[in-house]
Amino acid sequence: MAPSLSIEIETVTAEETGSRLDRWLKRRRSLTQGEVEKWIRTGQVRVDGARAKSNTRIVTGQKIRIPPKQSAQKPGGTYAWTDKKSEAEKAEMRFIQELVLHEDKDLFVLNKPPGLAVQGGTNITRHVDGLIGLLQGDSEYRPKLVHRLDRETSGLLVIAKHPAAAAELGALFRSRALEKLYWAITVKVPQPHSGQVRCWMAKGNGEDEMEDKERMYRARQGMLGAKHAITDYAVISTAGQRAAWVALKPVTGRTHQLRFHMSELGASILGDQKYATRKEVPTGIASGLHLHARRLILPRPKQKPLDISAPLPAHMQETFKTLGFLESEAREDILLPDRRG
Image: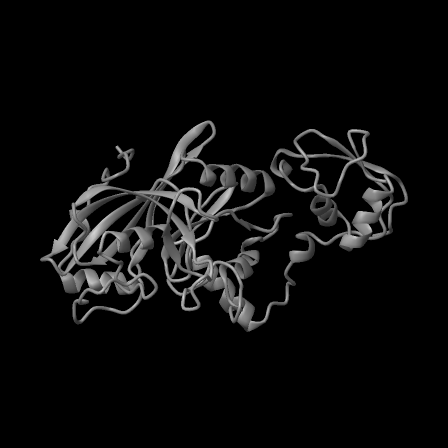
């Protein structure tokens, strides 16, 4: 394709609402961040006729002036995959596709297995954020994470397909309009069998040399970094006093909230080494953290809410069998409304 030398005016689509201006430009032109910054700084890019900044969030219907382009961007932007995929890429594509429980024009819902990190970090090279580009297909946009699960927690993980969906879903996860239910198996039985846990919690601040900086601790209101956390819970079934199958509804969304709150009740989640209580663990139990993001009720504009559940991972199925728990014992309306009728 011969490069165009004319100024272009492009209109922001509904799917692009919420995108940063610099990222929007990079999806349309083969440019570095530095080149985009120069365009914006020198006023060559205009939004509805006015200058804008790199971090300006664009909205539906805005007209964006773009100077002559030097080369055409390949579909999919910088995240496009080549047609000639290696066997390793093909295997990774099959892996991530098999995790998809639901897909529509705005989002994917995955059933994340335990042990798979959501994002990269120290010594983490394989993670959901690095794999979801394989779900992009012919779309112009790379799928985007809108929330997280701990590495060892399994279950429902929502991925946005385009910037407008990412903005909308991100707002939902920060609000209380979206409803989530987790299943856990605890060591010992929480007392009382149902209720609400409320407390202030903060990440370790390193004042004690032995303190784990990645662990949450009970805090007081007003302490540096303290956040208020609320969890509703209800015991579904018990194995004597040795263990319990518990439904958990996070009202707030703090780091390690459910794990910390169960530990505060003296009934830590089975397999949780960070928040383990000094209780005897039942013998013959599968290894691994027994915490699963089971059900999600997601409000959708002008349509019925998305109500979806994720099957249990293999190690929790094995433990259910060992302890005599039956999934049929769980009422669909426990802690959440039953909207499936």
